[in-house]
Amino acid sequence: MSHLARVELKAGLGRHLRAGHPWVFKRGLSEVPRLPAGSVVDLVDGHRFVARGYFDPYSAIAVRVLTLDPKTTIDEAFFEERVGRCVRARAALIDLTGTDSYRLVHGEGDGLPGVIVDLYAGWAVLKLYSAGLTPHRPLIVEALVKAVPGLKGIIGRDEVGRDDADTDDERGNGRVLWGQPAPNPLTIEERGAKFLVDVYAGQKTGFFLDQRENRHLLRRLGRGRDVLNCFCFSGGFSVNAALGGARSVFSVDQDADAIALARQNFPLNGLEPASHDFLAADVFELLESFKREGRTFDLVVLDPPAFAKSQKAVEGAIAGYASLNRQALALLRPGGLVATASCSARVSPQAFLDAVREGAFNAGVDLTLVEERYQPPDHPVRLQFPEGRYLKFLVLEARAL
Image 1: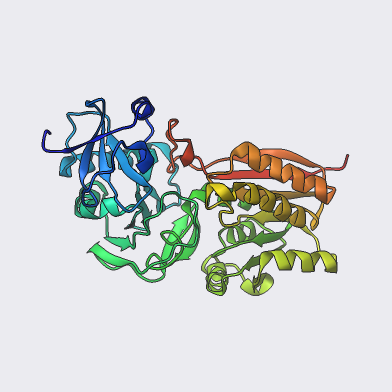
Image 2: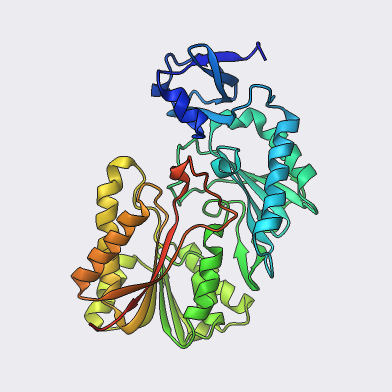
């Protein structure tokens, strides 16, 4: 592999990479090379091999590591092996009963940094988060074709060239990379529930698959309750609460298109939308309006977009979570439940819990934590990449002192 460009690391960084972290920022290089996006480079420490990865001249993350083995060639066989490993892991580790949609490749967590593949009812949606992956896209597509049984087609989503996973509102026109075009919208099944998904232009790859098990939990928690689902998107939590026997479900999201999709998802599951409420509105304004009206609920679901989209925004995000939970808890009946989530990777689980605690104190509500969850097994987290641990989901009960 002597033909590969060798890029010298700054002192001390080699140990960090050998331990398993997959990112090298530009500031971690002794000198940033002038190479085209996607160039495979060897990272060296004092001329000694440390890792091999791909180069991205447009990102603050200059190199994403693919292997620590100097004998590994980044070629067709490499991508086939990595994707094949993902397919086997999903079959072994996740319960696919009544489910045809899940994350197939989870970037850094699966040893393919920047590569996201979600499987929706036989169609794979490929989203690349680095310009350095664009030259390798044909190899990734070919690997998917070979590794995924019964694959109907592959939809490519526009690369956005960002450095983390904290932004929810990522839209772009998808295009068919291989196979049959997917229906639009596409009907998927998740734990027996059905949802309409726009895999061409919906947020992320079309649906938030990381909340799959938490949506299913709402089927049990919602039984006999009046439910308020804030930031409902296409109504995943709402449908499950209604399927579980909720007395009523109020779904609110600022996106009118998402609300329209949520309304469509109810009859798709044999539910009568007229028995429930759907509103396109600002969640924060609605919460204040409900408080003035004295309207209350037995279960409030809070699944907002990421509040911290940069490190500088973390302090404000924590305050935002505290404020949002305070507003929501003011509407919670005694003995009620709040299911509250954060998808901000930069906000730690403890910081999020502290924010919820502060919100409860300011609302005058005593909360008991009854369940704490993170992302499911198809969104694995490498221990040496804590940035990959982004989803926090808490279920808390209001109890009298």
